[in-house]
Length: 590
Image (cartoon, rainbow, N blue to C red):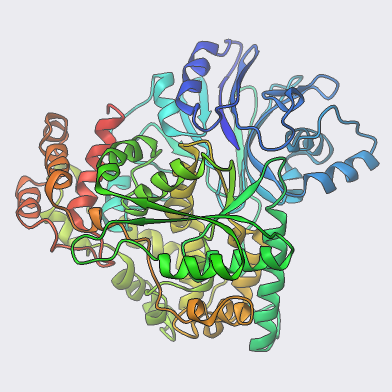
């Protein structure tokens, strides 16, 4: 995993190599093991390297194959690269490295942009054809690896992080009003291609964009899970299929030339990963759990369950206990690490966890994604049996942070939009063919949008802030396809993720399978008080916040007077939601 950057100029003007060079220091934490720059007239690529596969200099990037006339920069991991290398050798290709990066180059030469359909993994890459000047940009099926874009007349820049594009300069940093409304309504998620800044966009998941030398481009989506009943299986057969597919997924994600650990929360998802790895002979696996001091009457850890799993599977377990002394300084670091504002308090937990884990290993597996593909969240059961004509209203009632009408009392008039853009976005998604049941329509939307721009982005940003590569087996696309085809009633059973619970029986202790669903507890954010509340107050009263004037002053003051009562539909602290956006904007200097 790494950080990539680049600039393409249209026509005959040379690329601004210095602008690309300015982007690289912003991504040093993503790639602390080296950097590189490649300049080819109107195209310039930059790279920061984290050594995971082929630790030699043969694996460095940007990687050029002069014989094929191609150069690539790549972020991620192709888990089936060894099998693809053998296949490509059969076509006559020879290799100068043992890296998955070189496999991408050869695969592109063999199959063109369709090479993405051959890859099992997480990736964002850019490939330049020397002869034609064509550049192909691509992102993996579930959007695990990010790719941000900044376009202006005659020029396209890209990078793994939004702050890197800001460092290059020349970006329109005005607030995107549509994105702001999504942030306030769609649980702080801004769907691709938008970001909160007007001048920065992101390539959507499962998308290939081909840019010609004159600036004309085409974009296509190359994959989508089909929410149709393609298999007629019993409940037990579905559970067996999920177990077998997840077993393959966790095995795939052990490929590395460095040790691989597991982030063990104590919940079903990460516990199942540990159990399957132990079943495959991975004894003495290094596992990590985090806990916080209690606050606001809430417990700050789930060590009871993670300790149970660690003991049963004889892992080399590390409990990471976070005191109040570490919490407050981590808030600023966490905001700085965000490519986009993310309101979830889990971000701080993942940042602190990653800081300590990165001292032990460079790669971990993590359990993100199970809830979004197997119906583990509270808003799915109320959708069961809802007619499609009422599904959008039912979803909005359960998931949206606030009704559209409330925005008139919360946003200043210049930021208000007449249209309910988040509801319109959901309606357009629900109205597409397929996913005929309301639950499946919600799962399709969440796996394509919310999952990508909340938990997946959170894990990428926070782990890469410390040079730690996180792999997410529940987002193996073959498992996602299987889950999509599974009947909703099996997913909703047993208070959610029923088919996964069935699959885990006999491998994971029942005490973990049958426990109430837990969330990453971070009391210091859920209950704002003391220095943390002062930090929030300072952000919302800062001169930059006053000049920006996003929120009505009376709304802000009412929240500050009662900082912990007003909550969004899903229970997020409304004051934190506003403050986090302002903290992020101020940190980025916009």
